[in-house]
Length: 139
Image (cartoon, rainbow, N blue to C red; front, side):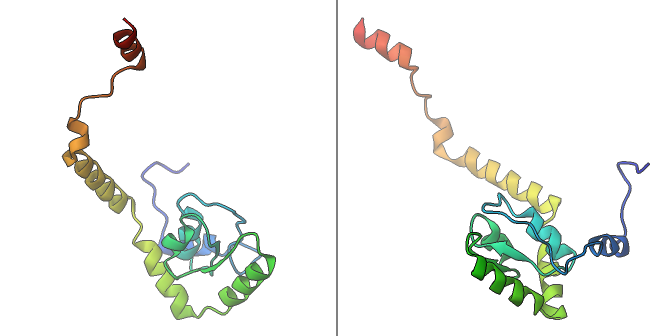
């Protein structure tokens, strides 16, 4: 049994990523929330085909081949392009995926909270309860 502190070597990760019958990750989505499957595939050095909707284009940042998820011909073309990706392109995609760390997530989330606290809206008086407004207006 692995402890919560167990680590997996980069070599083992790469080997695990290779256990697939297909040369690229296949996850059919019409809408992907943040794009973790895209980053996970890139981190494995796998060519990625993603939907051109949601957060995927931003997360992929040009390192994946995108297509309208409802356009079969577009998806076929994107798969064709993905299979032509060079080892150098896949290495750059892997480096891009490596920039998404939990430490970065925590740091950027903290910055959002700090900005929100500096924003004057949090100092405004809360809106009056609708029941109180009716009571005040109607007596």
